[in-house]
Image (cartoon, rainbow, N blue to C red; front, side, top):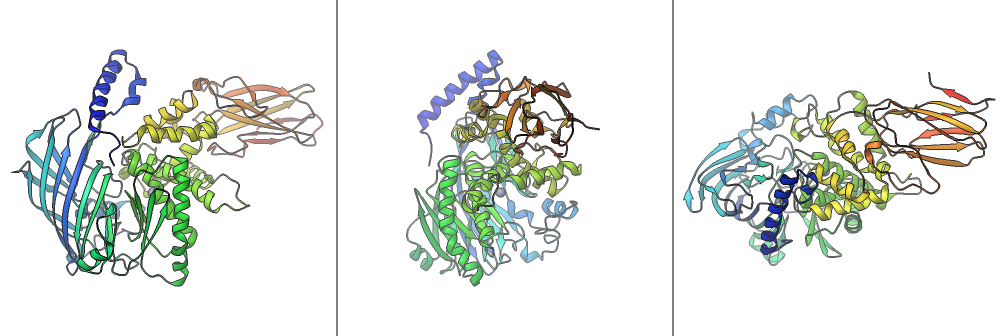
Length: 618
Ligand SMILES: [Zn+2]
């Protein structure tokens, strides 16, 4: 599903050059709203035949790359993900040497017998009909082109390869722990992405899959009687495919293609608005089977919710497939394990489906900016789960867990900045907390700065402006700034690039007859605007807002809220006066707990039973 025609693209290219020139001429960073302006495009047509006794397959494919970049490319690279599943691979060694290994991997790759290894071996490769030299370098195929691929030119790769599907260790492989025969993810030689940042040839060590949007036409030959769930839309009749063992799927404008197969799969569908939902699972024990029966209705509701929250899901279909080793997102599909409570089953489905917007359509480079994929997905997941399941006891703020996870990591001293490459964190925990929890807080916390409504509008704007363009943090920041109308540089700078924490305190409250003087201080290194709530002796409340100078603005004031002078970040302390009225009962900073203040003990002061009420922090 191409979003724009070729003429529009050419026009955009010309306009982008003009914008680029203007930007350079005027040194005007605002012009970056047009950036990056081009995307590579690719078409895959492939045919593979799987030998289910040896767990090996042969593949042949034609890959047509449209080099829309302004650069001539003298090299090309393909991912060979299966090569990670061999003793001594980077993934194996990393998993055995990191302080807190992923328990799904540990030393399992190291212990694999050779017949259970994964590998991909390219037998032949031509470029535009002529053979080329190539080198297998672990999980990357390095292709030496005879001639550069010119800017604006097309190039056709034709490849034949053999592969052995690994015993399922991480994400892909045969026979997962629930007995699913084939989880076929990261399974074919995939052309590496070349974007405005250059080539992305990360070895497969642990995670994250950047890719080129392309059209896939995939034909899979299997023994008869093995149902297949996949990215893409099945061509022809399912019964016929089951009988013949030949499955052809077509997917348009996706960054990857995944599939899974098990002879026992039960296949259900449910139409949800424009989108056909598919569900594939084995017959399960009674306690789990009931949950899968309820899953389609929840998934349809979640699809509606996410469409409303972020923007319209652009593909015709989405498949929830039992397989893999937990939950992993792919375009138009997810592989999840199936033996789960209802809450867990719906939770993992919602999370993986929410990735469709962030991983599949916005497709931020998740190696570099994992928080913009996992964190924003977690943000949407928690809101959606709150919508689906929140009972009367819920406090309506579903991000509480993310805040406490992030804060405890920050206080542990082992936090690493969000900007760390996904594979290069010192610990898996530091990655997990940063990518998922702090990434979620990054978005949730914007409510304290710009207000909920403006943040929500900004999220929709971000999706609309940057879908199919691989945005980075700057683009998210700009969309949010354009929504609220003031400066957010400082917020993204501090929260993404540093591990500085937020800690504000009330130092002193001196209640006078007419006026009360309140002094606060910033203890943490990260500045934040402060919302101060006063509770009076008669039970009435008043709200005050102290923005930061560098915001050059503030969120809309709540009803009767009083705007205080800006607090310069250079000033460790801040003093202001309020009317004493019936007497001060309590003063609290950030009473709605919207900021990730790492120490709340010093946020609240209660003045009770004193003749002349004075509070002074020691
Ligand atoms: Zn995720």
